[in-house]
Length: 499
Image (tube, rainbow, N blue to C red; front, side):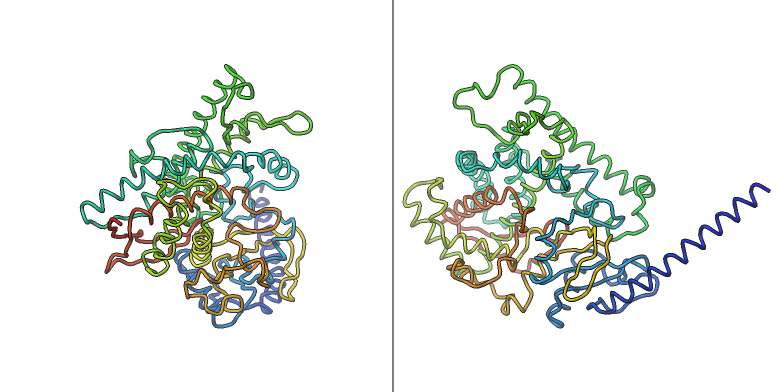
C-alpha cells in the first residue's frame, strides 16, 4: 500500500512538473518568436544538433549576423529552455551597464562549469563580495606596480626568442601557440607570484599548462552536453573524473605557492623590506578592507587561480594571433618593425617609457583583438526582466554577450574581414560607440588586468619583430577554435628568418 501511494505521488508530481514546463514553454515560445532564431529547429534537440562545438556555434552565428544584421539571437537547448545572445553593441551595452551577475548556477551556464576550478574570484563573484575584492585588488595594477614588470616581460621574451632562434637556425617551422602559452604563464608566475620554475625550459611537459588547456576544453564540452549538467552525473562520468583530477592539481599548485609566501611573510614583514617589489600575491595576503579584514585562504586561492588562468591563457591567445597576423600581412609586419626599430634605436629591450611610443604597434594589436577575439563570449544572468532590441526577456535566463560577433557585425564593421589597424587611428576623435569594441569587456566589470596584458603583448611582439621576420607555413591550416578563449585548432605554425 505504501509503495502504491509513493508511486501515485511520484506520477502526480511528474505530471505537475510536465504541465508547468508546458506552460512555461508556451510563454517562452511567444518571446522567442520575436527574435531571430537558429534554424532548423528540432522538437527534441532544439538547436543543439546544429553544433558539435563552439567553433560550429560561432560559424553559425557569424553567417546569421551577416545575413540578417540581427542584434539579438535565440537558440534552444534541446526542448528544455532557450538561450539568448547579444551580438551588437546596442544590446550588449544594456547588459554591460547593468549589475546583472555572472551565470554561476544555471545548469547550462559555462561559468557554472568552471566554478569548481576558479572558485568565487573576481571573474565569477558578484554583489558586495565582488565590490570588496575588486577594491582590495585594484592597487595590484597601479602604474607603480606595473612599471618594474617590463623587465620581467623582457626576460621572459628572451627565453622565448631562444626557442625561436633554434627554429631559425634549423630552418624548420615552429608551432608558436604552445611556446607563447608557456611564456605568458612564465610571466604571470614571475610577476604575480614571484615564482620562477623554469616553465619555458621544461616545455610543453609542464603539467599546469596542460591542465589549464584541458580544463577549458572539458568546461566547454560540458555546456554542449545537457546529460552532464547534473553534478552527480558529471562527476561520475570519465570527463568529470578527469576534471576533478585536474582541478585537484591546479589547486595544489596554487596552495603550495601561497603557503610558502605566507611563511616568508611571517618571518619578515614585506612592508619593512627596503626595495621589495610587491607582487600580486603579496597584496592579496596583506590587503585589508575598511573593517581591517583581509582575504581568507579560500578567497586568496580563488584569486590566484583566476589570475593564473586569465592572465596567461587569454594573453597567449592575443600574442599568438598577433604573430599569425604579422606573418599573414607582411606589409603590416614591416610597419610594426619600422616603428619598433625607430623607438628602440640601438637599445636591445623595450623600456617602460617606450610603451606609449609604440603607437602603430598598439593599433596593430587592437586590430588583432578585434579580428580574433581572445575571449569570444561572456555571459550574464537576468535577475529581473530586461528589454533587449524591443523584446522583454524574462527573469532567470542566461544572456550571452558574443564579443566575437560584435567585432564582426557588419553594422559596426562593414569591412570586418579586412585586417586594417588604421581603423583605430585617432580613436578619441571618432564617433564610434565605445561598446563596439570590448576585448576586455566593459562597464564596472571590465578586465582589471588589461594594462598588464597590453604591455606584455607590446614587449613580446616588439622583441620578436626586432630579431626575426615571420612567415606562414604553406599548406598549414590556420583555423580559429573558440573555447573559453580563442585557440587555433591546429596550432599556429610559422617560419622565421634572422633580420
